[in-house]
Image (cartoon, rainbow, N blue to C red; front, side, top):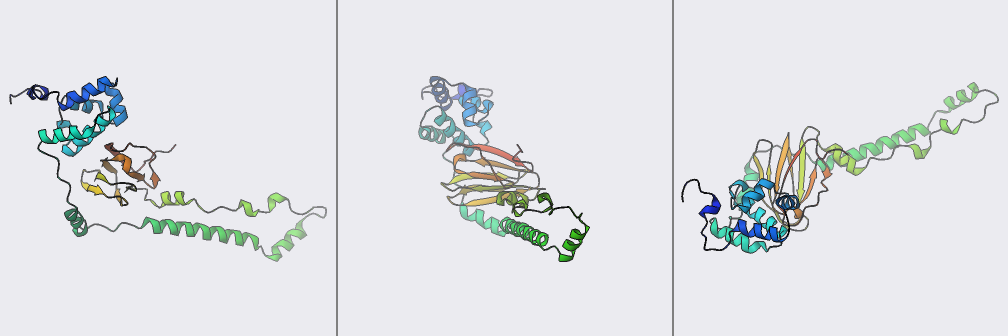
Length: 275
């Protein structure tokens, strides 16, 4: 291999179009621009251009490169499996799956502070609000008889009964707090909390804190969920974003991701934004 040659110059010319050329031709045939492909897959324009030039070094590894290939192939109407098989053959084979046993062993051995039970905190907050409302309602209806007598003696002779505005109506009493609002209130304001769940099918997930330290790197099976907390920021990479439900700081994220789409996300203490 000569120094300074581009990936396209180093490909054998007798193997037909390369992976990048195949994607480029399919995109052109579909009448799509690079910007259109970037908008539909949420893969940045420079990265789409690099992949179409057979430069996978900017993908960040084989796992990300395969995910980008799958998303781009589906966006231009191609079957991704032959492209993935060709990529594996040209780049040393498919990546090995993350072993489950060592991961869980490391989680059990690694000393970590005990995370608070947010469900119990939310229930306690609701009970406290309901008890306060009940106490306020009962106390307002049990006014001493002496106070009522003094009020009647001090009223003018021609005055009628107290106006409706002077008497509190039961319908005006505060209502119990919304459970969703209580869930948000139970999340610590000085941290960012992200909850991931996969109710329908499995997905590969990578989670890092604001220093780049890996909090989780593996597969969440169907029905599993995990919660991650950091003081500043939580970074996510979702291998199948359409299968993952994301909740940030007690609020569900309403973005709709397509099945098989690779998605990179970052959340801080203020997310999701108000309004």
